[in-house]
Image (cartoon, rainbow, N blue to C red; front, side):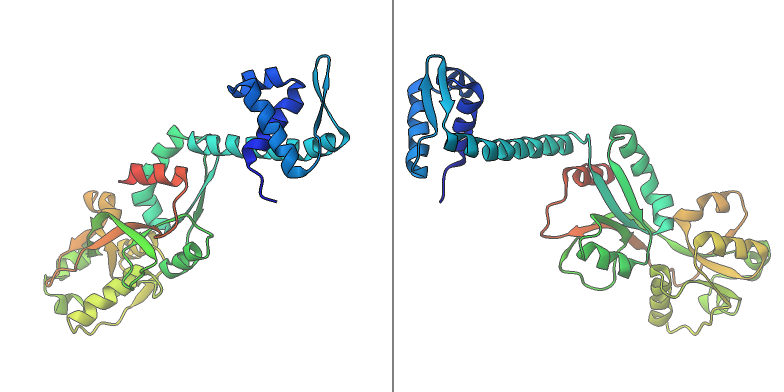
Amino acid sequence: MDINLELYKIFYTVAKEGSISQASNILYISQPAVTMQIKKLEQQLGMSLFTRTKHGVSLTDEGEILFEHVKIAMSSLKNGENIISNLKNLDSGTIRIGVSTTICRYILMPYLEKFHLQYPKIDIQINNNTSNNLIKELRNGNLDILILFQPEDENKDLKITPITEVQDIFVGNKKYYDLANNDINEVINLPVIFPNSSSSSRKHLNKYIKDNEIRIKPKLEAGSYSLIVDLVKTGFGIGFVTKEFIKEEIEEENVYEIKVIPEIPKRTIVYATIDKKEPSFSVKKLIEMIK
Protein backbone atom coordinates (compact mmCIF):
# COMPACT_ATOMS: atom_id res chain seq x y z
CA MET A 1 0.00 0.00 0.00
CA ASP A 2 1.53 3.29 -1.17
CA ILE A 3 0.12 6.13 0.95
CA ASN A 4 1.37 9.69 0.75
CA LEU A 5 3.41 10.59 3.83
CA GLU A 6 1.60 13.94 4.00
CA LEU A 7 -1.64 12.10 4.86
CA TYR A 8 0.05 10.49 7.86
CA LYS A 9 1.39 13.89 8.93
CA ILE A 10 -2.13 15.35 8.86
CA PHE A 11 -3.50 12.30 10.68
CA TYR A 12 -0.78 12.57 13.35
CA THR A 13 -1.44 16.28 13.93
CA VAL A 14 -5.23 15.82 14.20
CA ALA A 15 -4.81 12.88 16.58
CA LYS A 16 -2.27 14.72 18.71
CA GLU A 17 -4.41 17.87 18.99
CA GLY A 18 -7.77 16.08 19.15
CA SER A 19 -9.17 18.83 16.94
CA ILE A 20 -9.45 19.43 13.21
CA SER A 21 -9.48 23.21 13.71
CA GLN A 22 -6.32 23.12 15.84
CA ALA A 23 -4.61 20.89 13.29
CA SER A 24 -5.68 23.29 10.57
CA ASN A 25 -3.96 26.19 12.34
CA ILE A 26 -0.76 24.21 12.93
CA LEU A 27 -0.58 22.86 9.37
CA TYR A 28 -1.64 26.16 7.74
CA ILE A 29 -4.34 24.50 5.64
CA SER A 30 -8.09 24.96 5.77
CA GLN A 31 -10.38 22.82 7.94
CA PRO A 32 -12.22 21.38 4.91
CA ALA A 33 -8.86 20.39 3.41
CA VAL A 34 -7.88 18.63 6.66
CA THR A 35 -11.20 16.80 6.76
CA MET A 36 -10.87 15.78 3.12
CA GLN A 37 -7.33 14.40 3.66
CA ILE A 38 -8.44 12.38 6.71
CA LYS A 39 -11.31 10.88 4.71
CA LYS A 40 -8.87 10.07 1.90
CA LEU A 41 -6.59 8.23 4.32
CA GLU A 42 -9.56 6.35 5.83
CA GLN A 43 -10.66 5.29 2.34
CA GLN A 44 -7.21 4.03 1.45
CA LEU A 45 -6.94 2.08 4.71
CA GLY A 46 -10.57 0.89 4.54
CA MET A 47 -11.50 1.87 8.11
CA SER A 48 -12.55 4.81 10.27
CA LEU A 49 -9.79 6.50 12.26
CA PHE A 50 -11.73 9.19 14.16
CA THR A 51 -15.10 9.72 15.81
CA ARG A 52 -16.51 13.18 16.41
CA THR A 53 -17.02 14.40 20.00
CA LYS A 54 -18.43 17.59 21.58
CA HIS A 55 -14.90 18.90 21.97
CA GLY A 56 -13.40 17.77 18.67
CA VAL A 57 -12.41 14.28 17.51
CA SER A 58 -11.09 11.13 19.19
CA LEU A 59 -9.34 8.10 17.81
CA THR A 60 -11.13 4.84 17.10
CA ASP A 61 -9.50 1.63 18.32
CA GLU A 62 -7.96 1.19 14.87
CA GLY A 63 -6.91 4.83 14.90
CA GLU A 64 -5.15 4.32 18.27
CA ILE A 65 -3.13 1.44 16.84
CA LEU A 66 -2.14 3.44 13.77
CA PHE A 67 -1.30 6.51 15.86
CA GLU A 68 1.21 4.59 18.00
CA HIS A 69 3.12 3.55 14.90
CA VAL A 70 2.87 6.92 13.17
CA LYS A 71 4.04 8.64 16.36
CA ILE A 72 7.22 6.54 16.34
CA ALA A 73 7.78 7.29 12.65
CA MET A 74 7.26 11.03 13.11
CA SER A 75 9.58 11.06 16.10
CA SER A 76 12.24 9.23 14.07
CA LEU A 77 11.89 11.70 11.19
CA LYS A 78 12.18 14.62 13.61
CA ASN A 79 15.30 13.12 15.14
CA GLY A 80 16.73 12.70 11.65
CA GLU A 81 16.00 16.34 10.85
CA ASN A 82 17.68 17.43 14.08
CA ILE A 83 20.76 15.32 13.34
CA ILE A 84 21.00 16.73 9.81
CA SER A 85 20.58 20.24 11.19
CA ASN A 86 23.37 19.63 13.72
CA LEU A 87 25.63 18.27 11.00
CA LYS A 88 24.89 21.26 8.79
CA ASN A 89 25.61 23.64 11.66
CA LEU A 90 28.68 21.53 12.55
CA ASP A 91 27.37 20.92 16.06
CA SER A 92 28.17 17.21 15.76
CA GLY A 93 29.85 14.74 13.44
CA THR A 94 33.17 13.05 12.73
CA ILE A 95 35.85 13.49 10.09
CA ARG A 96 38.06 10.46 9.43
CA ILE A 97 41.34 11.58 7.86
CA GLY A 98 44.04 9.42 6.36
CA VAL A 99 47.47 11.07 6.39
CA SER A 100 51.11 10.29 7.07
CA THR A 101 52.59 11.53 10.34
CA THR A 102 54.93 13.91 8.52
CA ILE A 103 52.32 15.47 6.24
CA CYS A 104 49.95 15.74 9.21
CA ARG A 105 52.56 17.63 11.20
CA TYR A 106 53.86 19.98 8.52
CA ILE A 107 50.92 20.43 6.14
CA LEU A 108 47.61 19.44 7.73
CA MET A 109 48.07 20.59 11.33
CA PRO A 110 47.53 24.34 10.72
CA TYR A 111 44.22 23.56 8.98
CA LEU A 112 43.15 21.17 11.76
CA GLU A 113 43.94 23.79 14.38
CA LYS A 114 41.85 26.39 12.57
CA PHE A 115 39.01 23.91 11.96
CA HIS A 116 38.94 22.80 15.60
CA LEU A 117 38.79 26.40 16.83
CA GLN A 118 35.79 27.11 14.61
CA TYR A 119 34.00 23.77 15.01
CA PRO A 120 35.06 22.25 18.36
CA LYS A 121 32.14 19.79 18.44
CA ILE A 122 33.35 17.88 15.38
CA ASP A 123 35.38 14.79 16.27
CA ILE A 124 38.54 14.27 14.23
CA GLN A 125 39.99 10.79 13.74
CA ILE A 126 43.43 10.49 12.15
CA ASN A 127 44.73 7.29 10.56
CA ASN A 128 48.49 7.16 9.90
CA ASN A 129 49.59 4.61 7.32
CA THR A 130 51.27 4.16 3.96
CA SER A 131 49.60 5.79 0.93
CA ASN A 132 48.53 2.46 -0.56
CA ASN A 133 46.88 1.33 2.67
CA LEU A 134 45.17 4.69 3.15
CA ILE A 135 43.73 4.53 -0.37
CA LYS A 136 42.36 1.05 0.38
CA GLU A 137 40.76 2.33 3.59
CA LEU A 138 39.18 5.24 1.70
CA ARG A 139 37.74 2.87 -0.89
CA ASN A 140 36.42 0.59 1.86
CA GLY A 141 34.53 3.50 3.40
CA ASN A 142 36.66 3.64 6.55
CA LEU A 143 38.04 7.12 5.78
CA ASP A 144 36.44 10.33 4.49
CA ILE A 145 39.45 12.15 3.06
CA LEU A 146 43.16 11.59 2.45
CA ILE A 147 46.03 14.08 2.54
CA LEU A 148 48.99 12.54 0.74
CA PHE A 149 51.60 12.89 -1.96
CA GLN A 150 50.20 12.66 -5.48
CA PRO A 151 49.86 8.91 -6.14
CA GLU A 152 51.90 7.71 -9.09
CA ASP A 153 49.34 5.04 -9.99
CA GLU A 154 46.16 6.03 -11.80
CA ASN A 155 43.13 6.13 -9.51
CA LYS A 156 40.08 6.90 -11.65
CA ASP A 157 37.68 6.35 -8.75
CA LEU A 158 39.30 9.11 -6.67
CA LYS A 159 38.85 12.86 -6.88
CA ILE A 160 42.36 14.24 -6.39
CA THR A 161 43.00 17.96 -5.86
CA PRO A 162 46.44 19.61 -5.45
CA ILE A 163 47.22 21.50 -2.22
CA THR A 164 50.87 22.52 -2.59
CA GLU A 165 54.20 21.56 -4.15
CA VAL A 166 57.25 20.52 -2.15
CA GLN A 167 60.91 19.98 -3.00
CA ASP A 168 62.88 16.90 -1.98
CA ILE A 169 66.57 17.42 -1.27
CA PHE A 170 69.69 15.76 0.09
CA VAL A 171 71.01 17.07 3.39
CA GLY A 172 74.15 16.42 5.41
CA ASN A 173 75.97 17.72 8.45
CA LYS A 174 78.83 20.23 8.03
CA LYS A 175 81.36 17.52 7.25
CA TYR A 176 79.35 16.00 4.39
CA TYR A 177 78.32 19.43 3.14
CA ASP A 178 81.99 20.34 2.74
CA LEU A 179 82.76 17.03 1.02
CA ALA A 180 79.89 17.12 -1.50
CA ASN A 181 79.62 18.92 -4.81
CA ASN A 182 76.62 19.38 -7.09
CA ASP A 183 77.12 16.34 -9.31
CA ILE A 184 74.72 13.58 -8.27
CA ASN A 185 77.24 10.98 -9.40
CA GLU A 186 79.68 12.36 -6.83
CA VAL A 187 77.06 12.72 -4.11
CA ILE A 188 76.02 9.08 -4.36
CA ASN A 189 79.54 8.00 -3.45
CA LEU A 190 78.79 9.33 0.02
CA PRO A 191 76.80 7.19 2.49
CA VAL A 192 73.11 7.77 1.75
CA ILE A 193 70.27 7.35 4.28
CA PHE A 194 67.10 6.33 2.44
CA PRO A 195 63.46 6.65 3.49
CA ASN A 196 61.67 3.40 4.30
CA SER A 197 61.13 1.20 1.23
CA SER A 198 57.32 1.35 1.54
CA SER A 199 57.12 5.15 1.73
CA SER A 200 56.06 7.46 -1.10
CA SER A 201 59.32 9.39 -0.61
CA ARG A 202 61.33 6.25 -1.34
CA LYS A 203 59.30 5.58 -4.47
CA HIS A 204 59.95 9.13 -5.61
CA LEU A 205 63.68 8.75 -4.98
CA ASN A 206 63.73 5.39 -6.77
CA LYS A 207 62.11 7.01 -9.82
CA TYR A 208 64.67 9.83 -9.80
CA ILE A 209 67.49 7.26 -9.61
CA LYS A 210 66.01 5.18 -12.42
CA ASP A 211 65.27 8.15 -14.70
CA ASN A 212 68.85 9.38 -14.36
CA GLU A 213 70.44 5.90 -14.59
CA ILE A 214 72.14 6.31 -11.24
CA ARG A 215 73.59 3.41 -9.30
CA ILE A 216 73.18 3.95 -5.62
CA LYS A 217 72.97 1.71 -2.60
CA PRO A 218 71.51 2.96 0.70
CA LYS A 219 73.73 2.85 3.75
CA LEU A 220 70.73 3.00 6.06
CA GLU A 221 66.94 3.05 5.85
CA ALA A 222 64.83 5.07 8.28
CA GLY A 223 61.07 5.14 8.80
CA SER A 224 60.61 8.83 9.59
CA TYR A 225 61.93 12.23 8.66
CA SER A 226 62.91 12.99 12.23
CA LEU A 227 65.00 9.81 12.41
CA ILE A 228 66.72 10.58 9.09
CA VAL A 229 67.56 14.08 10.33
CA ASP A 230 68.91 12.69 13.62
CA LEU A 231 71.13 10.25 11.73
CA VAL A 232 72.35 13.03 9.43
CA LYS A 233 73.21 15.29 12.36
CA THR A 234 75.05 12.43 14.04
CA GLY A 235 77.17 11.94 10.90
CA PHE A 236 75.89 8.62 9.55
CA GLY A 237 75.62 10.06 6.04
CA ILE A 238 73.47 12.27 3.85
CA GLY A 239 69.70 11.97 4.00
CA PHE A 240 66.86 12.29 1.49
CA VAL A 241 64.17 14.57 2.94
CA THR A 242 61.55 17.15 1.95
CA LYS A 243 62.88 20.68 2.26
CA GLU A 244 59.64 22.22 3.51
CA PHE A 245 59.51 19.74 6.39
CA ILE A 246 62.94 20.61 7.81
CA LYS A 247 63.11 24.37 7.28
CA GLU A 248 63.99 25.02 10.91
CA GLU A 249 66.83 22.50 10.88
CA ILE A 250 68.29 24.14 7.77
CA GLU A 251 67.83 27.69 9.05
CA GLU A 252 69.51 26.80 12.35
CA GLU A 253 72.32 25.06 10.39
CA ASN A 254 71.78 21.76 12.12
CA VAL A 255 71.81 20.24 8.62
CA TYR A 256 72.86 21.65 5.25
CA GLU A 257 71.17 21.30 1.88
CA ILE A 258 73.33 19.48 -0.65
CA LYS A 259 72.14 20.64 -4.06
CA VAL A 260 72.44 18.16 -6.89
CA ILE A 261 72.38 18.22 -10.68
CA PRO A 262 70.04 17.12 -12.16
CA GLU A 263 67.59 18.63 -9.67
CA ILE A 264 65.13 16.31 -7.99
CA PRO A 265 61.62 16.89 -9.39
CA LYS A 266 59.08 18.54 -7.12
CA ARG A 267 56.16 16.59 -5.70
CA THR A 268 52.58 17.63 -5.15
CA ILE A 269 50.65 17.12 -1.92
CA VAL A 270 46.95 16.53 -2.62
CA TYR A 271 43.71 15.73 -0.89
CA ALA A 272 41.63 12.84 -2.17
CA THR A 273 38.01 11.74 -1.78
CA ILE A 274 35.89 9.13 -3.54
CA ASP A 275 34.92 10.73 -6.86
CA LYS A 276 31.23 9.84 -7.02
CA LYS A 277 30.51 10.08 -3.29
CA GLU A 278 29.28 13.37 -1.83
CA PRO A 279 31.47 14.37 1.16
CA SER A 280 29.76 15.19 4.46
CA PHE A 281 29.12 18.83 5.34
CA SER A 282 31.98 18.85 7.85
CA VAL A 283 34.42 17.37 5.31
CA LYS A 284 33.36 20.06 2.82
CA LYS A 285 34.16 22.74 5.41
CA LEU A 286 37.63 21.27 5.96
CA ILE A 287 38.18 21.15 2.19
CA GLU A 288 37.16 24.81 1.93
CA MET A 289 39.83 25.70 4.52
CA ILE A 290 42.50 23.66 2.71
CA LYS A 291 41.62 25.28 -0.61
